[in-house]
Length: 288
Image (tube, rainbow, N blue to C red; front, side):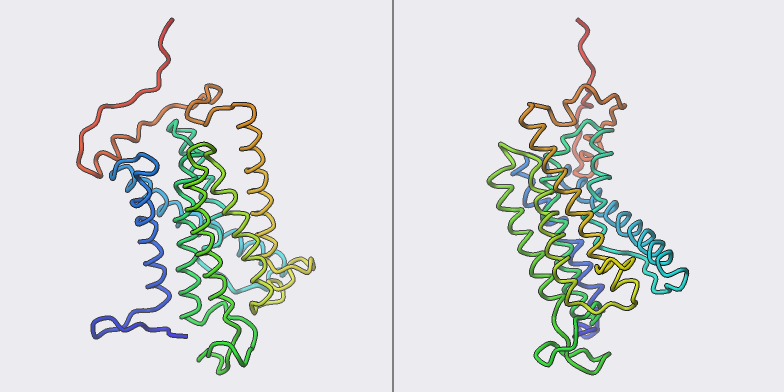
């Protein structure tokens, strides 16, 4: 447990530092994978900024939903409110990407493959921050790590959680190399299922602040295991639908003529970031 990190004669809050590094890792993964997905630097930065902005929105919405659900489950007694909940990023960020792709006629399957490693990279850094900050700690364990706030050693559950997320990052990178060309759209749902399974497992070793978190609605599950089951099921359905669409030869959303939404050209936005001039690209049908 190290709440402060030395930095050129001063100190930085360890959790906030890890969170900031997680944000930088988003930009890093978009830039190193840009050639793999045939995107220019400006385009990659645009997608990175989109991910960061709507990642924050996802975490904020998750906190609101979590606070409301636990408040309802406790009959109004729950008072452990949070302003951001990072586990909501893997859950809700694809929804914002889907809306973006429908509006802008961009390939949803390709972009979610591109997105996947950066999401679980953020989860990795956040869990390292939790370990250093001493929050979300595990059960008392004489072989664990020292928690200065509690005055005893605890099971390093967040370290294992961080390692699990990092392994998912590696798996996503391998899947991108092996699948993204021939079978786009499989990387994110597979990563989401793995994240849900591993986080749900490590929840068994974490201490929970209230009885409503530990045994949500008397289901025998923690509140976050309840959420991870939802994430797992959603990603499984997503994976199944992607497979079915592939079998039927269905195009991605940018080519699906059944979607009748106005096209928003974002190529100019990406070009402005990189300082280049590009021609506007339209998606109008040619008259016969």
